[in-house]
Every structure is written in structure tokens, then in C-alpha cells.
Amino acid sequence: METLKSVLSSFCTGVAVITARERDGRPVGMAVQSFSSVSLDPPLVCFCPARTSTTWPKIRAAGAFAVNILAADQRELCRTFAVTGGDKFAGVPWRAGGNGAPLLDGVLASVECDLEDVLDGGDHAIALGRVTALTAHRAGEPPLLYFRRAYGRLPRSARPAASASMSSSMAAARSRSEA
Image 1 (spheres, rainbow, N blue to C red):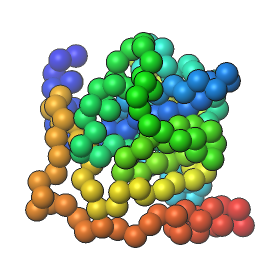
Image 2 (spheres, rainbow, N blue to C red):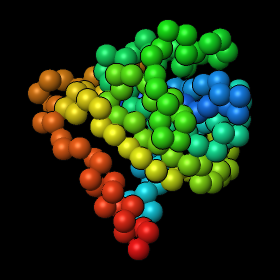
Image 3 (cartoon, one colour):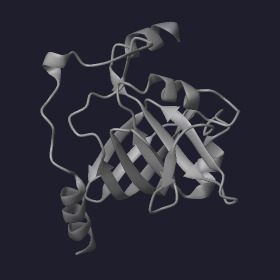
């Protein structure tokens, strides 16, 4: 197990916070590093929550969620959502997205999804989300990275130039899938 963890920690990942609203309106969220694009047509993403997570059943029951992609300066926000229990949203500014899920202030981008399917992934679940909306909030800013069990960031020389808004490409993808 330790060898597996050690070797796989050689793969650098981004960090995101998955958020949703319970039926009573309370926000819930969890930090993940297992977020990925799956398909452009239809637009699908996935994340892999541990089966032992106490937050995952609440997100699953909500049926809709948001992926909040963290910026390099959001390590503390990540730590807030990485813990079990407590009020993770205390002092965290957010607004409701179109699907009701919390969109956290200051993130690089947000991806709103409807829960499409949940697959078996051993000691984790594989949650597939159908993308319903997305927004780039801080184009050109570096992401929060996780590498060898530590947070990091891209060196300034490796940062790409700011990219165009993703909204138009999302609208085009939605039009193709509805045709």
C-alpha cells in the first residue's frame, strides 16, 4: 500500500472542492484531487470520493454539484474542506450556482453538474457529472497543485498566457449534444 501511494504521488494533480446543497438548503463540500474531464460530447467530468466519506452521501443525495477549481493562493480553503465534520462554510464567501450548488469566491473556475452516474471504484466511488454550466473566474492564474503529498504551484516561467472564456465553447458543446 505504501509503495502504491509513493509511486502514485509522483503524478501531479490539481485540487478542487466539490460542493452541493442538502435538501434543507445547507451547503456541503469536500476537497478532492481526483477530478478529471471524461468526455466532451456529452460533456462529462468525474471525481472519486472515498466510500468512507461522510460528505459524499450528502452530495450524492443532492443530485447536483459544483466543482470549484482552486487557485494556488487557496491552500487554507483546501484545508478547510479537507477535514471531516464542522461547519466548513463558516466564513467562506460563496453564491449559489444555477443548480443551487455553492460556487466559492476566488476560485479559478467552476463547473456545475448534474450527477449522471456512480460507478464502483473499489474503496472509492466514481461519480460522473454531466456539465450544465461552467465559468472561468481567474483566467491566467496558477492552480493549486498536489504533488508528493504536498501543495505546490507552477513556477512563473511555466505559466501559460490567459485563455479565453470557456462559456462559448460550453454553449457550442451543449448545442451539438442537443442536436
